[in-house]
Image 1: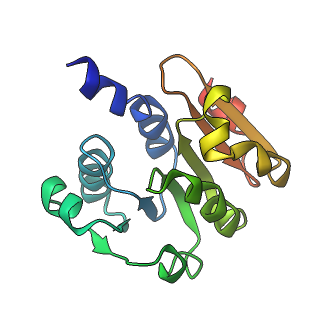
Image 2 (image 1 turned 90 degrees about the vertical axis):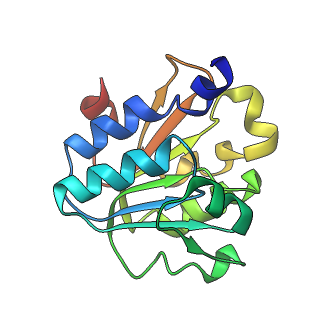
Length: 158
């Protein structure tokens, strides 16, 4: 059970953002916690939901409508302005690159595994200066960070 809980530490942040937004939702890297949550909330709210994954076996395990993408650069994420973009894909060092691609295309960018000791892998510190607003959700490990150039996320999420 502990292992499952570790994978869902971003859930409180996603739920708060979903409750306060109305537009399309993007997920990069599907999972047992995030994909069902975002899929069903989007279904309930009549919102567009797109989930990309680069591991076909993982897509089959999770079992929701997920778009396979062999190359993350080919994921068409810049054509839409997203209310929420959740980045939790593998390889993990790819997340900061896609966050930069989305910095002016998403109201909220949520990155999992954001505790400082993990920066050696995820390199989020490289992109923090590119965003006007940042909120670190540190209540659970792994931590989650929310970035935005549009909304003061600290006021929204406290």
